[in-house]
Structures are given as structure tokens and as C-alpha cells.
Image 1 (cartoon, one colour):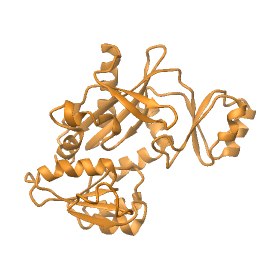
Image 2: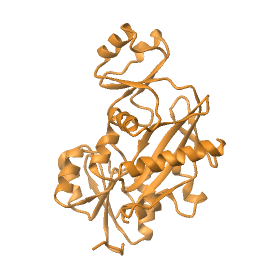
Image 3: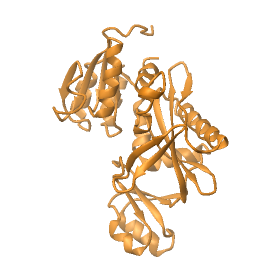
Image 4: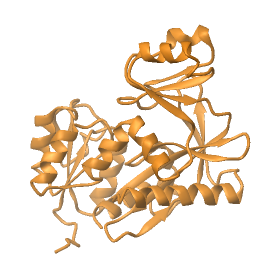
Length: 299
């Protein structure tokens, strides 16, 4: 039977950064007992969680043992040990979003294949297994300048990304299996945060425009409502809703888009958790992204 009362429910959050902290702040209003797993005792979420557990989010035993302590397990970062999550799921533990969804999102190559398979517009790309293979692709003119290199795994907040405009930039090439994307002529970067619960109910927040710090490659400013057209906004919301439905996902999904100079709206990448593009919802919307994530994962 579905649990409809949150008092004394044990919620586990893997990683205790700012997003985990803000999720705990919302959970405390619902009388939820919160557990956070993080390697740093000084992590932002550790001081306000009901229970802080020291451990590494990529270590099998840390994640597995932590998952057995709680009723519902979620995360504020994608870099989590998938095998531990799969084992917990096989033993009947509730993990939301699902480990298979997280596994797909962890790999930018699988993400791109997912978009193409389902007709979701995204930038043209090719996959290469090494730096040497990329250089060989350039030599054979399979890859044209300018392009963007994204490591398939491990990249976040601007890390694991290299913009290669010409041969002089090749010193910036990253080592490892990569997605090589055609460089998009970007007019704006936007995001839609969409939530879905077990019943299949879907709700989207209004489109937000993201202004990035060019040096840090991090979101510096949000504009909501965004300055894009109604048609572009409707496309972004439709694509975000389609993606979370196709994934059959429960929880919060942030979908980042490029609006190109021709007015097209194409998916950049997705994140299955609260997101920096949704911080304004704490004060601008009656239900913040953190409360919405709780509503979605708890059905």
C-alpha cells in the first residue's frame, strides 16, 4: 500500500551539497527524518540533516550500506555508484529516480543516442573512444572545426567540456571517451524543470533563461519569464514533458536547451534532480523545486 503520511519516513540523500541542504530544509517541514551521505563532515547538508553518514558516493559499500538505512533513497548529484543502486533496487529498496535512468544520464553518449532514437532535437554528434581517435577523426576530416568535446562520463558544472575552435585549441583536448558535438551558434540558453510522479502526473515550471559566467562556465543569473517567443517556450515545455514521460521517470528532471541563431530549440543535456536553474522557485513559485521533488518521489 502506498505510504501517504510522511511523519517518521526516512529519506536518504546521496551527497550533501547546497542542493541536498535545500532539499532537507523542505523535508523538515514534512516531519521527514533525513539522512545524508557525504565524504566531507563539513558538507552544507550535514549540519542540518537528522543523520550525517560519512561515505563516498562512488564507493559501492558506502552507497549500499547507506541505502539500507532509509525508506526512500534519492540523490543531489549524478556521480553515484550505479551497481550499488541496482543491488538495492533488486532487494526491494525504493530508489528515485530509478538507477537505470541515472545510468543513462551519467553517460552523455547514451543521452545523445536516446534523443536521436526518440526524435528529440539535439546537436549533431559523433562518439570517439579516445583522444587519439579524435585526432584521427580530425585528420580524416570526419570532425570539422569548430566543435565541442564532452567526456562521456564524469563531467559536471563546466568540467569535462572543451570548446575547440581551431587547431591551436587542440592542446585543450581532454583524455577519455567523448562525445564530439557540432558547435551550435547559440542565441540563448534556457531550461525547463519538469516533475513527474508514479501516477504519471506531469508539471513543468515556466521556462527560465540562463546567463553563464564565461570564465567559470556556471550559471550566474536567471531570467524568468524568459525573453524567448511563446512558440519556443511551448516547444521547450513539450520536449521536457516528452523526455520525462519516455524515461518513465519519477522525480524532478532539469532539461537544458540551446536556442540557436535560427530560432531552433535543441536539447543540450538533462539532470535528474533539483537544479541551479530552479533556485528562483524558492521565492517566485508557490511550490519550490525542492518541495516538488519530494512530492514527485513520494507520489
